Length: 110
Image 1: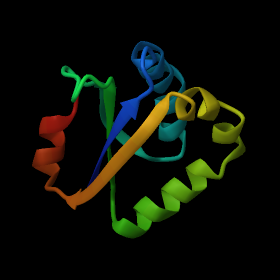
Image 2: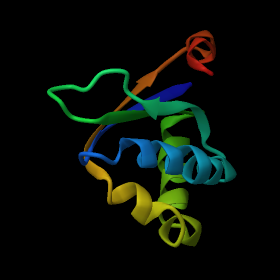
Image 3: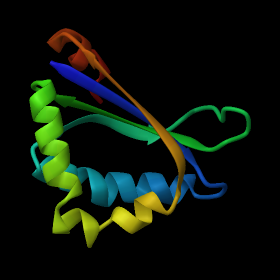
Image 4: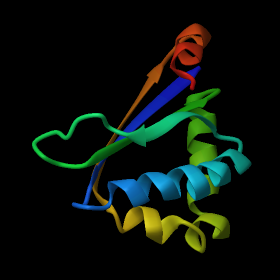
């Protein structure tokens, strides 16, 4: 199982709306494309005073990761949906992709 952890450094004053759009619009759309969202939300602390958020997703393989992301991010649903509301609030982001056991993934699930 592949676990992806993405962190976002957000533009000042945008965290609450970023998280709302992510949870209410983006995550349901991501799930429509078969991507398993484990959790997402706001960081409990601000690193160096920056507002931050996170997204944790799983995929069955690296190939599925590539294919599902490509299908989602190139879709009209994303481009004409919540894309601008998400992207406009991101200052930068960082992603790591690791292998994880089903038990580890389940422990992270909310």
